Amino acid sequence: MASTWDALEQKCKQRGLSDAAIAAFKNNYTQLQQGATGLVPETDIEAVTQLPKLTDLPAPKQDEIKDLLSKTAMLKLNGGLGTSMGLEKAKSLLVVKEGKTFLDLIAEQVKHMRATYGSKVAFTLMDSFSTSADTRAFLQQRHGDLLQEPYIELMQNMSPKVDANTLGPASYPENPDNEWNPPGHGDIYPSLLGSGMLDKMLGAGIKYLFVSNSDNLGATLDLTLLSHFASSGNAFLMEVCERTLADKKGGHLCKRKSDGKLVLREQAMCPDADKGAFEDVSRHKFFNTNNLWLNLEELKGTLASSGGFLPLPLIKNKKTVNPRDSKSAPVFQLETAMGSAVECFAKSGAVQVPRSRFAPVKTCNDLLVLRSDVYKIEEDATVQLVRPASEVPLVKLDDAHFKLVDAMEKHIPPGSEPSLIGARSLIVKGPVKFSKGVVIQGETAVEAAAQPEALLAPGTYTGTVRVEAPAPAGAK
Image (cartoon, rainbow, N blue to C red; front, side, top):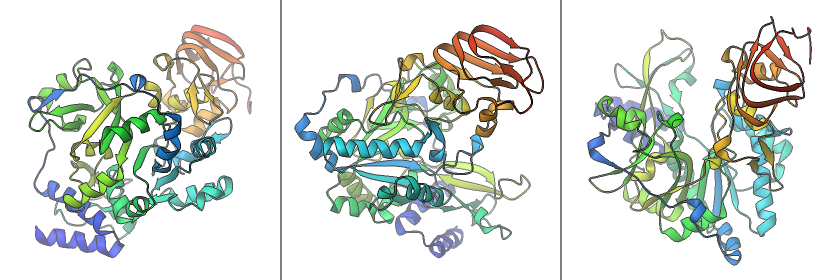
């Protein structure tokens, strides 16, 4: 197999990948060659039953905040395009509330924190080749001061796709870009090391890094968490939330019996025989929010002692080399997840946080709730729930008419979002167009009974609503 690795390594070097990126890819490839399943059976683990709660942690002393922030950087993962919602630009450039994008709100939060505490907390976006140009152009237009900062962009690497039959480099001469794939957000570790940013931050006295997804506006830089992490002695801290039945298919935190280390077990890592235990949310109580805290000094030391990479478990995705051609050659895309690094450090921890710190926008259902009056923008540019997180209304829009953002905005134009403050749930079936001034109360199901589009007039609605009135052609 040496020859297939040699060919892959040569391809990586020709693209200019750093030694750190190549070492991380080699770790993934070795797992692929060895047939590593990554399975974590129930007999090898024990449940995590109790964790510190953010709500019980002491607030930091005012006189330590400025010093802590001067040693802290905030990194937002910004590599996704939001293709599942029909977007062709960085997802963070989607307008979410009051004409502001995710990136506007994040940038304003950073600036507000700096002004409030007189401490220049560092700010970084981890971009991909798909998002870098659009993101930089947006910052130039709206937040040009941030674009000039030394840590503003960390570029995600690319990994060569692996031919599923030969385990050599995949080939697609018609479009060589299809021979490469993004390696997942576990790439943050080789990117920090290989780009030189890790050393640059450490050289500037930056010790703590808070990482979260750009589409999760609940993931603010919380000063109580920062203080807790700084005093904990942990190299790595994961924010987790309590699982509900709605989360039973998602991964959970557990503890490995052999060494007592925390492990993140995803569904693909669970043997079929253990699915029942995996989905038992009363047994395995906590899921990863992807809000993570890293001690950069410890990260540097751990990378050095493990050969320049973190031995993250492999995520093996079988695809076709051209994702738009199901008849093209089968390939493996080798990826990793950053949360799985919880098992790679000598000292890792987790903290239970309220559900309000986990509010990602993955679908137009999520987007409508965020745009509604259930959330408001505060003075510090954070987006806060007007009611408890346990009471966020359940929204299910008809995928046939609302799945993509432009389709949703055709039926619910920006500024015409229904009031959901008094709603428990909203289910929409068929092509319903919402007028401005719609108020949803309790549990409401709205169904279009007119074609090609039914117009829901202003008013208060609850229960089952059949909309008979056709929308006038060209109605706004």
